Length: 199
Image: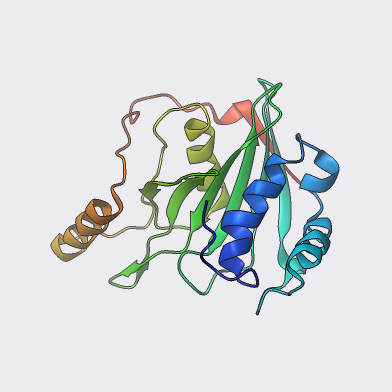
């Protein structure tokens, strides 16, 4: 887990504090849906406030799957720096005590187009899964629900206008980040199997 950033940084919050905190909760919905409680504990533990970060702008969405899985999806204030997060997702499979932690991170711009990266974080690793060009919670969640089941994610490139220069830039970025390919292009999606609810 990442610990090199100062505790008053947004990076520390998103990549160290929250993954560890969420894993300690045993799926407690009262805390997973209450960023104010995270704020109080973060301040108590670190004795500091995060610079230029508005806790009140965190939005909570609950996604329920028909199979019994539940996901807490958080919209964060728009990140200004790489690799801070647009969204964080904590996906808990049915009967599990701990969830899986995913992020949609701000990344490089290629010829003026955004290329946020879908990633997974645990106590030991930070895994990059793929580039998308639109920080959209539905696109992010569709990828996460596949990743949570050990499948390759669906990562559409909505609005991505490709030319030779752009393709080369994307390939270099993917090579650098060692991103996986989507192997399930022909797999039928089951969008009607889950439901979003804002808290």
